[in-house]
Picture 1: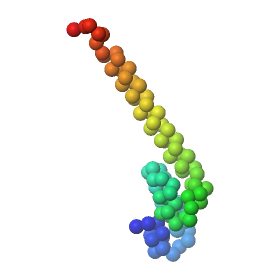
Picture 2: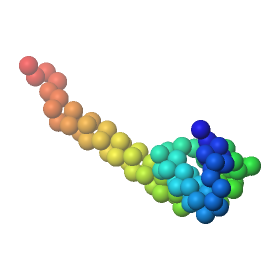
Picture 3: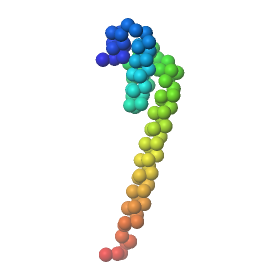
Picture 4: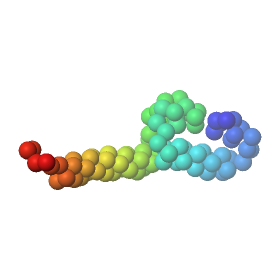
Length: 92
């Protein structure tokens, strides 16, 4: 069920707007791409969605950067640990 089909059942404009913002924020924070969010909200293009929800996408981008940095840091620590635990060549 899309946002438009749910909101069509609600006739109160204020609820419609609040629900739309909450709906978009949840999708963006969950990692849904802008094109999908835009289509779900009924925007004619993704630029509208980006213009309205720029702050949400910036927050999501920051989280993505942290995830990648942590993964790379873990990989580096794992390699360092493997090198420390490796036996020197010629050792039995």
